[in-house]
Image (cartoon, rainbow, N blue to C red):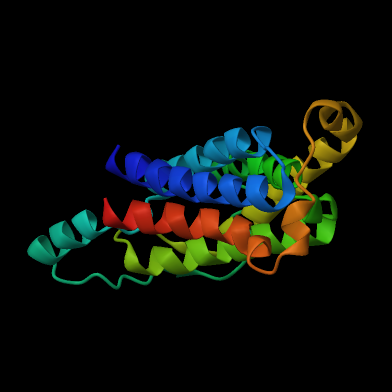
Length: 198
């Protein structure tokens, strides 16, 4: 709950400052992008904190008090050695929203390549974080299935894009600014930091 409140406060301050700039410089008002953005932040927080078990200070304190070691590498580097497991299918489902949300918020992700890259690096970041979480595994299967899930989500978006884009227009402004082009990564950083601090 603390991570959600903290992330939403940071996001609200960012959105407020951003909107003021848009109104001043471009006389442009945006609402849909921010609403989807709050949903995206909620999705990231639920995924990191509740499903994946992202490392947190509170968890590290408990581990240090009981077992004394934060770094707990449990590596699985052979793809699908036991075939496709139930958890692999759940990973695909868990990452599908990412493949839909990215192109809805930012035009850059209308291109499959950029959605694939974002999903791959987000998944890699998550798997590396698992090295610092007790009883979690850094698993090549997760990296593959998470990325596949986002790709499946992007395909869903692509199939329904004509319908979706009648109501939701991704902001082209975010393509023109070097700073604003980092906004998707900012969401991940804020979600990860807030998950870690709680």
